[in-house]
Image 1 (cartoon, helix red, strand yellow):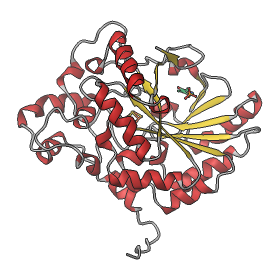
Image 2 (cartoon, rainbow, N blue to C red; image 1 turned 60 degrees about the vertical axis):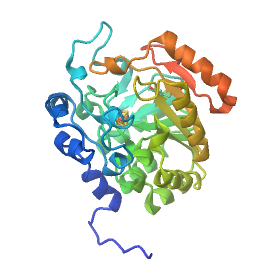
Image 3 (cartoon, rainbow, N blue to C red; image 1 turned 45 degrees about the horizontal axis):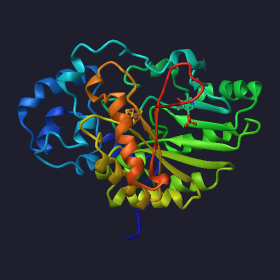
Length: 335
Ligand SMILES: *Cc1c(COP(=O)(O)O)cnc(C)c1O
Ligand code: SF4
């Protein structure tokens, strides 16, 4: 099929898919033929952190199953509104303290993280950034120049990480303008992109994005985020293969989530499926203690046990590092 040429100003297909995401809990329940009894709690929890899930991701869920591992990541639940255990708060990873200039987080040596946008294609209920003050803290184009000057002044930035939110929700011309500005960072060797879009909205990996990636003057690392093998269907596999075709190194990070992937078989299947898609597992994160997410927590002893059994089952390169982010620590901490 010959792709139809887009008229000037017409949104790209991925932008239409992004804008058409499901946001109404009633519609999500209807699409999956789930009981209406789930609706009042879903509505109440969505008032704190709105529901948002692309239709292609919904299509990978099992209809009629309220415990589907993909659904659990996005369905607002009553448990989010329950009193949270001690230690759960709005900024569990110390982002406020690590912000050196608006939009820039510098926690670790030689790496600087840019909060490019607050927008995401999907709202993950466990996300540590559900309370993050994006409007004040993300780096719009007006702040890029100041950030580059800050990095040039500090020196020693080998790697810039584009994060958010999700940087790939930005239009490609905007990303290209950002990377042109980053050419002013002396000694920059790597660009890393932290994104869930190739998984939840594989349409995003279009010719324009691939051309931008292929022309970057740095080594490129794309870290995607999938928590369960069911997320990686054939469309996602094709998008990941196309990304790898630009020369980018592909890694995955997951979050250990009760009721989603706190099971050795599930984690092993995820690692195998990632490899089949050309992606190596990088991190398995212990949940950040963000208020509203305590029902996803897996205690450390069980997490270590799951991880030990995973090491027995898989070749070493398919075992992700089990880590926790500790505010103020010089690296992600192994458990
Ligand atoms: C997680 C993180 C990084 C990247 O850490 P790696 O261990 O290199 O993956 C960099 N900066 C910040 C602020 C982070 O939170
Ligand atoms: S930042 Fe990542 S984990 Fe958080 S809501 Fe966005 S896609 Fe999900």
